Length: 237
Image 1: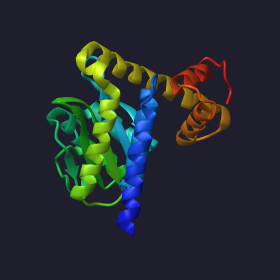
Image 2: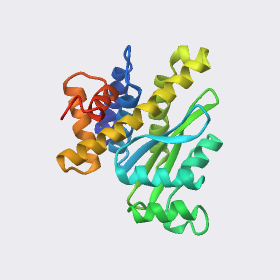
Image 3: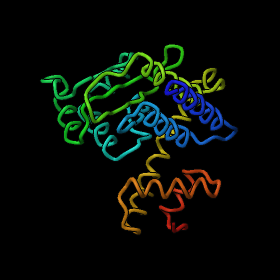
Image 4: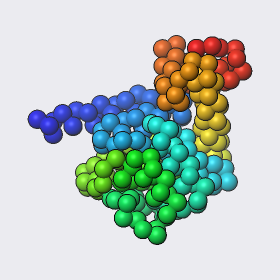
């Protein structure tokens, strides 16, 4: 019965992602849907996505919590960690117990432990040998993902990668790069809007993001456009 329930949840997840891939789809919302889905399906405490910009530099574009976003950001500032290695090598990286890393990625290890994470699993966002980012899963307890769970994570990451690039982006690299840059630029606006909402409504950053996203969805508006209106004060949530 548990297996059947999991299978239904997984099927539903792929249907949700497929439904997101419509004309004029919102890349940022697609990636946020991916991390939310992965965290739920794989019982992760938090999940996040790193994407490479036009110059090949990684940046956080989607996250389920401020804690995981902080760990990923610090990892990028150190230039080393499981997520960075996953992007560099194009292969999945698992740290089953962060507390036992020792001298390996000390900056990342300390930051992760301080945020309450004990294990991390990073899978590449790749297509035909091209790696455009990573999907990262954080857990509060040590342990490795099962082979089945790693396959699920990679499958969801692959679907998102195809959605980002699409056929036209595969044929024309500049289009793909522009899409990724648009996603990164959108995230900057969203972070600014979260700050405005958090200040105006006395909310934490996670609650501020939920407010922003709920308004976008309930009014059938693009997440970036709503964020821009919040930042320039033409919209008060």
